[in-house]
Every structure is written in C-alpha cells, then in structure tokens.
Length: 82
Image 1 (spheres, rainbow, N blue to C red):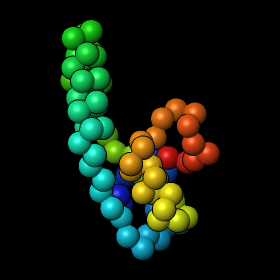
Image 2: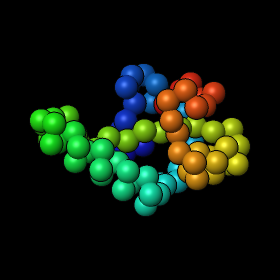
Image 3: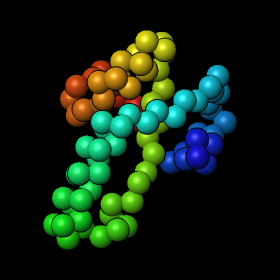
Image 4: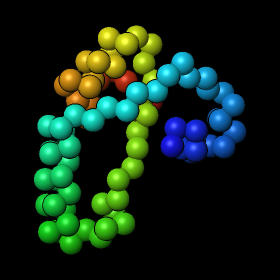
C-alpha cells in the first residue's frame, strides 16, 4: 500500500523509508466505526465511506508515538504533509 499510494507517480523515486509501522488503536477504530455508521444512516454511499490510508512522515519516533496515543485532529498539529 505504501509504495502504490503516491498521488503523483513522479514522487515515487523521491522517498526512502527506513521502516513503516501500521498503527491500529482500538479506541480510534471504535470512534471511526461510530462515525461511519452515522454517515451511512445519513445516506452516504459505501463508496464514500470506503477506508483509505494516510501516511505521515516523522523526523523523530517520539512524534509518531505521540500521534498514535492522542490521535491527529484538524488544527491540532504542526504537521502539514499527509
């Protein structure tokens, strides 16, 4: 998923990763599930509710751990690239 998810195909050669970690936080998954159920009840289509992936690049592992514990909310971070 990581290597096939570039919006711009020319960006593919511009990144090198030392490792990627999949984070699954059960509290956040429950929150997402409730959000999706509410949107489905409001008439959103399956296509609109389809899961997608977001990738964040951190300079320090501590930054990644903080986001994994507290989540990432709109306007709550100085992170500008997703």
